[in-house]
Length: 327
Length: 281
Image (cartoon, rainbow over all chains, first blue to last red; front, side):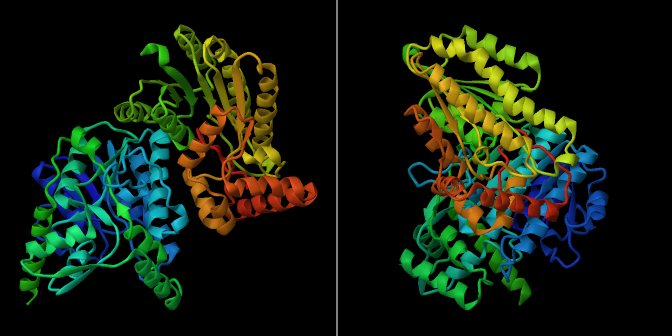
């Protein structure tokens, strides 16, 4: 069985990628930190290697014998919003992974980035892979570090002939969101009589769709190409309507005006001396229309985006199962 | 249909400014000839451009440092009815102490930024002159062309060549239907090196930073209007004024100190970036 290294394997996408790999007859090798909660991988036929993307030797021992690499490990928030942490994991970590992958001549390197390093469009003409990164001035440490890491990936494609592909998932929902990461949007709305919806909206995608594309991209030679992988473009109001319906609750959805949302972010930023997850740059990214098209990926990888209602349903089912287990 | 088609040839088209220029030129209806290094994913880019815009795209993945490459492009364009735009974008650069720069590095910068650009323009001028419409040559220089900068040695010098070369030809071809423009961008996020530096440099770099798409749009519009010298972005225009107005001694000193500080911090050997406009300060 072909071995595939997965970093960030215990995360929302990682857990789903590992399952998709197993279903496609691969042997996943999971690189995870000792401190990480790996309960999303319990009982799966995969190898566990303990270590981090910051350590060259740990990467080397994890990657030896692997034919391909799926690099999904990344931080997207930091409690102190400290750039050096983003630099260490998202940039240096990717650099380390690329170095070892080039040295070992792995046949495929899949880099998981984010849709937001491509500038979004509106609902009528959503953003595509041709769009450029325009949000550097927002000073989002996450976006800047992911964009920089993408440049490193592309440079290795040219310099070392590494067959690397960049996948840009939009906002993922589904099972095994241990942390939770994107699942926090569910807890924001669950059980609430009144749901405050931020301005703007997002493209929402079932995490299994992204995992499917990731595994299918292992079979293709696509060096240096990039794919947006998304589902439906919904305003937050539309999204919370779906959530309320799926959770069988009656909630009133109140849209927060953009100016109020940004003012709140600005005040938080000042009060916490710019050391908060909720700050002006994160609010600017969150509170706009992050709308994308995944025409290219759905054509190339022949996937039909799963409706968001199903993604929300799956995520809710998994969360309630997890709550029951912990009781 | 073929009567109204117009074609643009763009070098260094796989990423950065060249990629953005390709996309923006396609958006305003140019058929494209994209030239970039082997393995740079240009075929995939071409596919998506063709599917998004109603244009045809031809790809040459070749190394412009090979003498045959220029002949290959010349013989291809000779067969075209005409060529309406040539964008000389491929270039490279880096920084470091002059005495540590390798001969290979110096040679590569001068070859690509000066000789390749000159020869390609020379070989393609017949195709450009054949056009029944006005045709355009856009040469990508740099804001660095306006100030000699220590520790960058051949890079700003090569870009000053582009400036002088372009403006000379502009006069020569004034009545021959070919309009020459020289573009002087400032910092852009076109490779990992420039990104890293811009993040570290903070506010001034951020103020001068323009998105690659914006630079491409501005440059194309201004070129099509027949502007001679194009400096995209307010921040860069101010930098240009600042360099003109202040005594040149002070400016050179400030910029050189900035570059030196950066080199001292990095303490890295000099390196070149393909298909990339390395930032000047």
